[in-house]
Amino acid sequence: MIQSMTGFGKHVIQLPTKKITVELKSLNSKSLDLNARMPTAYREKELELRKLIASSLVRGKVDFGLYVEFTGDETSTQVNKAAVLQYMGQLRAIAQGDDLRLLEMALRMPDAMKTDREDIDPEEFKEIQLALKEALSNINSFRSEEGKVLEADFTNRISNLNTLLQQVVEMDPDRLGAVRERLEKAVSDVKAEVDANRFEQELIYYLEKYDITEEKVRLQNHLDYFSTTIGSADSNGKKLGFISQEIGREINTIGSKANYAPMQQLVVQMKDELEKIKEQMLNVL
Image (cartoon, rainbow, N blue to C red; front, top):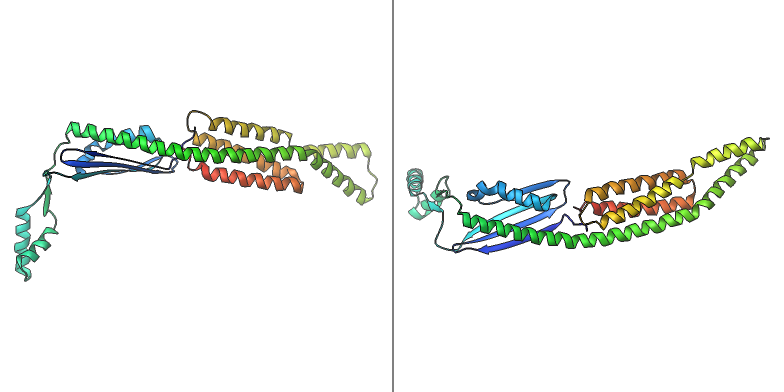
């Protein structure tokens, strides 16, 4: 079963003095590109949280947010009274204004607020880890649902390619006959004496160059392999991408050898279906 790399997950926990929100958003990427936003006090635990995310999401451009809202009397940020009073004194010496106005200006200055760094409570961090696991579960569920939509689209596209390939197979005898007839007419128009046996040998050699039997077989095998891989237990976006490249290679070869307008029209339709598969393949995990 395939998974999309697009997803969203969120979980909120309420502690006695804090509300902590964990959010995860992901888009497609060739590898895991993780961007983390969290309060400075929690940065010491960033590596552990990153490892937990990487083990679950594997690939994608992931935005991870940890937001902390204090709901009780506890706060780690306080006014730096000494610095504020010093700023107010300096401002009063160079500008007129009442104390309230000077206080507003002083609070905007560097170091006007100070934060007492505290170690993260182990129990609180366990709660954060559990919240992250819940958010990961949510985003993976989201990815799976998106994957079902992609899988249905791929199945439809592969079915269309199988139908078009069958039309190519049915048309091939007529194509070779038309090519042979065209060559024979070209020789007859020259109105020159030719050795019949030699002409037949050259004609067979020429027709062999336009034979697409191997391409038809390989293309059918690639289409079957694509369908089998979609149905596997794991999401194999990179593998499906490689198979898509092989499908494209066989379609291009058939188009270059066709030398027959009706078949080339089928090839154009096949390329259109494959291009739509490749566009969606960018989102597959």
